[in-house]
Image (cartoon, rainbow, N blue to C red):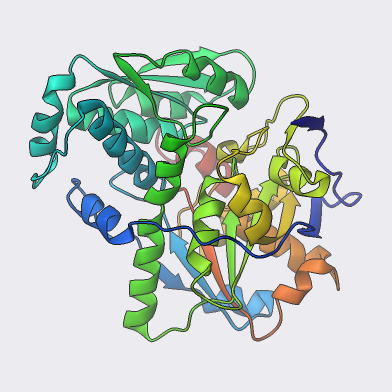
Length: 394
């Protein structure tokens, strides 16, 4: 693994778009989607998140249609992360128990099946949403939780994690530093539930990727019910690459469909890796307001899918995310800065891309699916972006 700075955006725009030079055929991956969906349906508060048609966005972007999968509220949490975290926790605890916990009908019965493991702690590193989801699972199952966050994590996100009953540790430095610190906790009485991987640690992050398949199962069901065709372009925010990997797995069943990834310009580790032809770690700190994407190193287990299966990458500055937050709010969709990143990338391509490389995917007949992965995880920041900071309290 080498070290590189993210590719510089076009002067003055906070934007760059590149076709992935590594794109090619992806080896199919078998995912037990029905089993995973059945698992999620037994968790408290499960319900499909909305798939919304937004003609106003399609008209402005000059494309055929825009669908938005809105993950503003998933299991009562403001992001999609519970899908991956819950499945990874479940499979990890099954392995620690050494037995199949079936049959169980609800989370209380599941907690009883896992009771012989207590006392036990679930550990994670996070910029906010993944750690909160792990902490929620720990609370539901009667376990402890220890969550590490990088310095600079907002108080609202820390409070959200602590509100699940977790111990929160602030680690000096970046998200990568928090990941390294969390890895030290693995042991007989604790399991690390990470959405990124490192040498010798890959099974759990693979389960996280699998867990995200429920989102795409819901999309397929909603498309079928509404009589919609499968989208041509799936636009996904990219952090370490886990969600993008799940998106790539999904489009393998849709010939001609492509995935486009969007990253912050100062945390574009996947774009930098694609351009370098190998995994790279970014220098310095990543401090975008798109906090869930502030990752300096791609996940090695996601990389084989992302490096081959993502057609192109867009990197954007924070102002594009702010604008997208406001634009989504105007059509009734609550999106935090990370959640709005995919639309921010589309806006940047539309307004600054000209006849650039991404335009091949965004013609007048293109049908787009935009993943809005996060609601207002920091309500104060969300209100300030909307210019309503005097409403309510954080």
